[in-house]
Length: 111
Image (cartoon, rainbow, N blue to C red; front, top):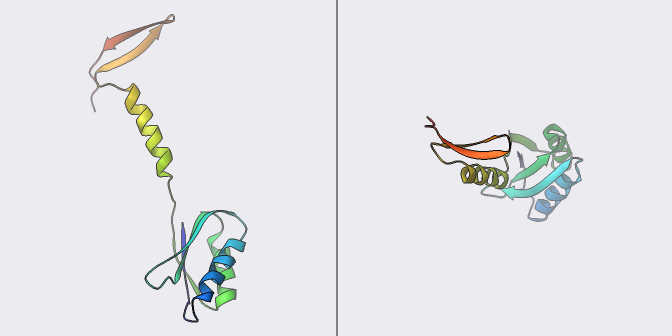
């Protein structure tokens, strides 16, 4: 996730201009939005160069300040993985297979 502060003092039509400029940068863009109290920050989620994005916005507006760059983890994928792990795991019981015949063994699993 990339957050860039852009000067929006000229009016609301420049907000759409900022979104169009951010969308024109090459890369894998998942989401573009305006954030902040005055909607003066462009937030872009995806795989693209933050410096290139800042330079392009600076050419269009005269002022653009790169505020933050962070990694976004997909929460939906993590939830699915945790559910699958919890279904198969029971504390104190492990499943093993010997020569094609599954059997249950009781072992205490310490955290």
